[in-house]
Image 1 (cartoon, rainbow, N blue to C red):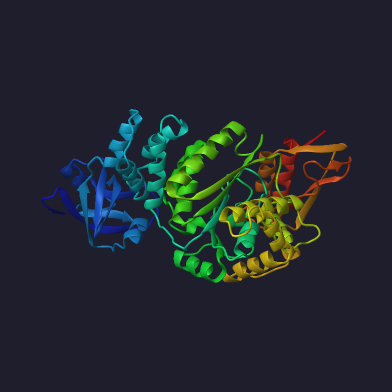
Image 2 (cartoon, one colour):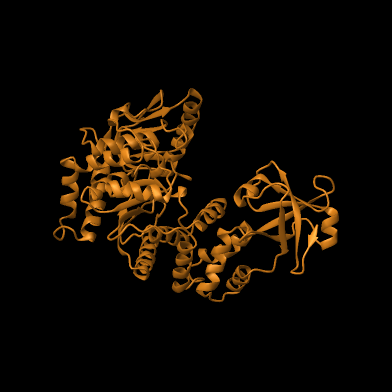
Length: 503
């Protein structure tokens, strides 16, 4: 062990071939711990070249010798540290981020510098999940954060990550979500980009839904790219449909998502910060926001929807983004396919203008794309929806989608070539009547049991949907599963859950 005069010391690195994830853990010999007054769970700062990160101490009597530090494979790889090199450690002072968290818990208002210190330490893993949970608590109470603090939080989320520039204007559409299907994004991107507008779309994978936009588009082309590759794709096609997780856009958000996922809830303040920080990072200048509202959607109350609208418009104004918020009634899924494969088939059926395309998905895509075109002001006032529809009818949108698929390394296919699960089962109606509603969450549960989003061929096709008449014995929906076991799991759920309400 080598000690210096700056309250830090050096230890020889011993590699331990185990991946531990975060927080970073190191192992010290108990004799060294006794010498420095360190106990298990103590936090130290690892200083390596120009970088610093916080590590947590575990102790041993035999795994490492005195003067050594056991370091796991993931931290060695992250910081390019080799075995037998000397690593410097110092005693961790109470960071400014923790001081800011304490201040907020006492009900005080934070400055931008204080909020930035918290988000930067989240990104650098200097704060653990417990610290983050305490910082997140005020997000559940809209009165606990001032509008200025919400703006600062959004700014800090953005500025601690990668920021891409594509020029002007840059269009985007975002849906708050909660509806199965509703795969309008690939259609909107194709329509808008067909009119030479830049629309670089980053999307998420499913966390609790049957499929995310990134999952669905991955059935057609790869979605994970570096920022340089994305710029190249956008330069060729004016658009992209990629997974946001492959970039470093607002990286703090990924850590906060895990905290809120454990709680099983995401406050709308956090949702707004997350969405807007990523739009800013992608250089978006014109945004249409879709808020579906319904009893089994993510937003089930029109009052809450109006609060979300107000917050998004406030943040848009602060960051100079021209935004239109559309609140839409949601009584069931949008489209006929639910799950990766069935949703991808729906998208292609609309773009290829097949006779059996889902008209509700087509109408909503035209409505949102039209509003975005109107917001951009590239056509006569109010002509956006007409131009969006024309792009579909004359094949411009499908031509643009083919360009995007090829630019992202995919293969252009006909909608009917999308593979669905070989194990199928038709669920028939037990009564005659009209379908009043579909329980979105129960439907999603069935589709996830079938294997979506991990298994792309799994899902459901809705033979009947909201507002349609049905007779006893007619097929309501069809299940597609990759195996008899998956099909059996889903059928068990179908028997227990009410999915269709028929009156």
